[in-house]
Image (cartoon, rainbow, N blue to C red; front, top):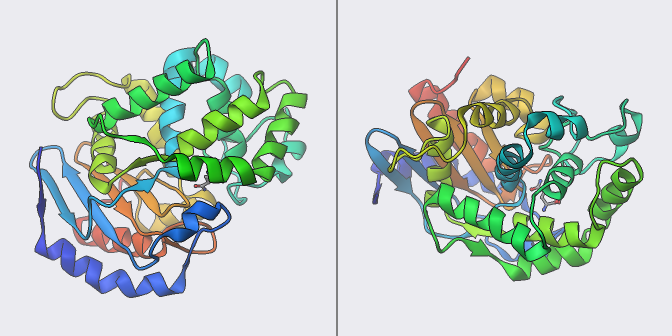
Length: 309
Ligand SMILES: NC(=O)CC[C@H](N)C(=O)O
């Protein structure tokens, strides 16, 4: 599948690029702070007619929280939904993605959903494998298959940078270990989680992964079922209710598609039955979503009537 440039998408990008100045690049993970805040690119994978792009769509970025949907899909396939949802809830929090507050107040004491850091850490802990390397390999192989790109790898500099500074995520893990939600070793989990967040790809790969979800888990080229339909549906539901952190309600109102963002500025979007969308725009708003990426999606959704509602 090749990706063609598209004049109208270029115009749309040009019309929203100035929003990048209203946000800022995440630097709480030091290695993430090195990118150019003005970058903005998009790829759209239409399951019927091919791929279109605008901007530097081959520029690589790390998935960060976008990876949470993919680890969730793998773990649901590994363990089944009863096991997973005994340990992680299904409700949006309305709190920032790294918040610790509801972990203590919710009854039973478990993370409210798999799209916040606490829930995602619990999910990554559930990835099956005899060793850290085996678990990592299983996750990476799964993501390569979804993106149909064997070159997808981990950016070890970003992974290491997060590993060395992830005090709050470690705190979440210690709390969950005390409450029996996390079973494994915490340093091993942090290693696996920070590698998962540092998996690097471009907008084209991300759009293709979106196309798999748009097709209920089927590979858009081979037709192979990569994710069972029910699990793809669960993932898309979480993307709608919790995918854009504590801006998920506003996003549902303004754009209305399953989507997942990450603090690298990536956004994975899904228009069911039709499109996968990959966006990269590292300048973030105060909630950690790509500021220009959101505007771009809003414009596209209005123009092409993407909303599922
Ligand atoms: N919102 C995000 O993208 C957060 C992911 C990041 N790796 C973290 O755990 O802090």
